[in-house]
Length: 205
Image 1 (cartoon, rainbow, N blue to C red):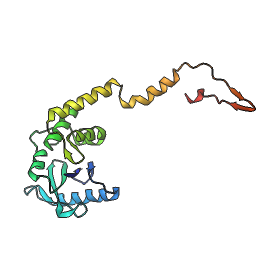
Image 2 (image 1 turned 90 degrees about the horizontal axis):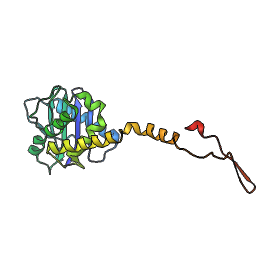
Image 3 (image 1 turned 135 degrees about the vertical axis):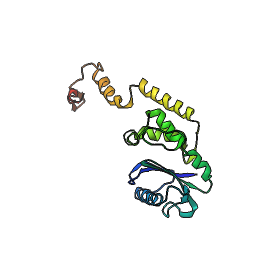
Image 4 (image 1 turned 45 degrees about the vertical axis):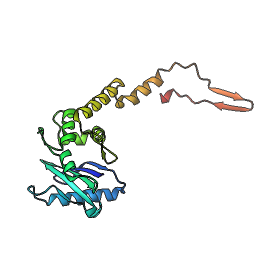
C-alpha cells in the first residue's frame, strides 16, 4: 500500500503532499522535512530505493523516489508493494518543457496543463489533486492508463464549463435571489396580542 506521495522542490518546499495514513499535521510536516533530507543527501547515480525515515515507520517502509530538474517525487510504500512496480509507475519516458517526472501522473498533468511546470502545481492545486485521485486513491493504484485518466479529467472540465464553473456559483446565487419576484412583504404581522415587525430585507440583496 502507498502510505504517502510527496512532491517537493530542491529547497524542500512541498508542492504536493498526500498522506494515506492518518498523522497529525505537525508530524506530517516533520515527515516531509525528514524525507527531504534523506533523499537530498543521496547521489544521483545510486539506487532510488531507501528505507523510510523513523517518523514514517523506519525499515518497515520504503521510499521510492525520482529527482527531475527542480522536483523530487517520493512514494512511501509498505512491504506489500513492489519497489520495481512503483518505480515503473514513476519512471519517466516523456520529456516536458520545464521538468520531467513520474510517467503516468506527470504525463497526465502535461496533457491537462499543456507543458506542465512547477507553477501549475502551485496555482492549480485542486486540479492536481483531482488528477492524482484518478491514479491513486486510498493508497491503492486505481488506473495507469493515461487515456482513461485524461478522458475523466476532460469530462469533469466539460461538467464545470456547462455549470458555468464553481467560481461563478456565488454570483449566480445572488443574482437569482435579486430576481425573485415576491409579492410585497407585510411590514407588521399581528398574531393575537403579539406584534412582529418585519425588517426591510432589500439591503441584504
